[in-house]
Image 1 (cartoon, helix red, strand yellow):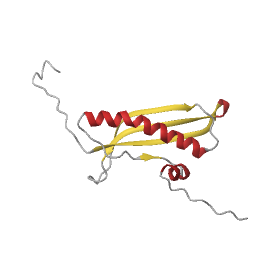
Image 2: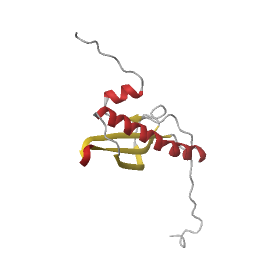
Image 3: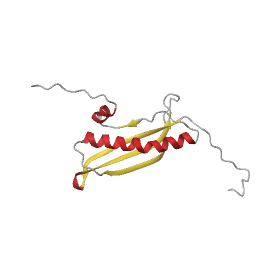
Image 4: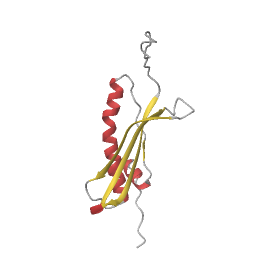
Length: 129
């Protein structure tokens, strides 16, 4: 291909792609009462500037065992959210250094308790006593 098209060029340009992270866990599924966590990092169109939100290829997909024994599913989800947010920092820094600054990365979880804890929106229930 290079021999036939000697004047070929590769052009890179910045787009409005934003880093998105999907976080998930499986509670107490491994031996010795261990849980598994996963993170899926990908670029997607910025929802503020485009109508069509099309996912792009994944940047990183990671699956790990949570080393400590957790006492609830919400604790496992919170641990996974923390780990995935820490892993996203170098990816965001790399995008910044490449001239593609990122908005705050949306971090998706499917657990309402972990989401409320992370966003400091916990509501205490009144006791019936």
